[in-house]
Each structure stands twice: as C-alpha cells, then as structure tokens.
Length: 226
Ligand SMILES: O=C(O)COP(=O)(O)O
Ligand SMILES: [Mg+2]
Image (cartoon, rainbow, N blue to C red; front, side, top):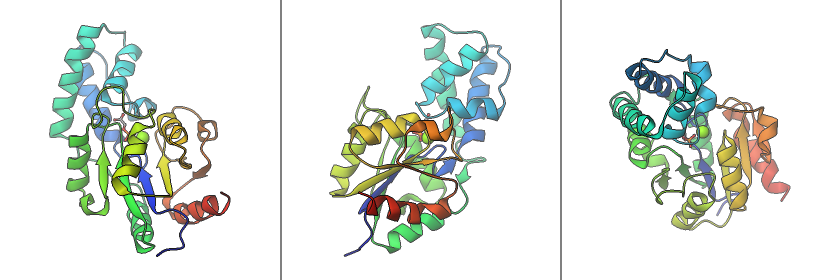
C-alpha cells in the first residue's frame, strides 16, 4: 500500500518524457526536401508536434507553400519511413525524467505512456532507450483506431482500464494532453519545457512543472487538493 495520492501516472511521450524534436524535425525536413521545400528550424517544428506525425507534416507544408491531400498522403509515408530508420539519433529523456520515474515507482505508482505517435514507433523508441520495463502499458495514436487519439479521452480511459487503476494523473505538454485528460476526469500536469504551441499557462493544466525534479511534490500537492 502507498500513501501517494495516485496509483497510476500516465505520460505523454514527445515533449514530455523525451525530447524527440531534433529527430522529428529531421523527418519533417526529409519529407519537405522531397517536395522541393526549404528546411525548417527545430524551433519552428517544435510547436507542430503533439497531434501526430501527419498533423505535424501538414503544418510544415502549410508553412512552406501549402499542400493538397494526395501530396500530404504521399509525404506522410515518406516521413514515416525516414523516421522509422532514424528515430533515436538525438532523442533522449529530459533531465531528471528517469529519476522521477524511479521515484514514482519506489512509491508503488504504476506508470504508462499515452502518445499520439504510432504505437509501434513509441514502443521501439522506449526499447532503444532501455525504458520499456518501466511502463505497464503504451498506448499510441493508432492503438484504438482512427479518431481515438488525444484529445479524445479514450486513450486515457484505456490506460486506466488496462492498469486497473483507481486514482490516475497525467503529464503532458500539449493542449491535446490537457483536453484528453480533463475529458477523462484525470488531473493533468503541464510541462513548461515541452513543445508548446501556446504559453504553458494557457493549456489549462491543473499544475505546471518546469522540470522533472518538481513532478513528485507537484503530484503530492495536486492529490492533497482534491
Ligand atoms: O506524434 C506526435 O505528434 C506527438 O506525440 P505525443 O502525443 O507523444 O506528444
Ligand atoms: Mg507531446
């Protein structure tokens, strides 16, 4: 038994647990180059991440001259093929993230990942970083079928059902994370270091952390306030 206020903490992946921005930007730029488009800076790509690779690419194409649906379909495949071969070149956990996972696990808290990345890619990234065994489940943007990625509450509800949890919290960096968690009735912590497409205060999260050293005390406070 634990007196920690949550028995399950779910994490978004891109921009929350892991800084995947350089590898995702390289994949976007590879696809853009196939269309004769100029490359974008990582800083320009960061706020495009969070709604899935297709949504990220659509924004990259819009930024560099627009696109039609057939072009988007074709370049989405190009992007995924490139990303699949170069997923963990620069990708790494954020500072103190692994320590925060250890600290939660030591309190008996189960951990999960709910990402809008394809499940197979998310699973492979975690394996490449040696993080697989820390999570009771990994739910991707495609796991529950079309239309059931975040901001739908369904992947959060599925995470809770799979873990058999009673008191879950979620940690994320985008409006998709906050909307999904809130629609599932789960308190949500926003990450100010993530791939924000708006000021972190405007996400509407229940709390904000500026680094993973703040996560455990923040969850304790959040739990006490409920
Ligand atoms: O693939 C994406 O755009 C983002 O995935 P995330 O849900 O892990 O932030
Ligand atoms: Mg994210």
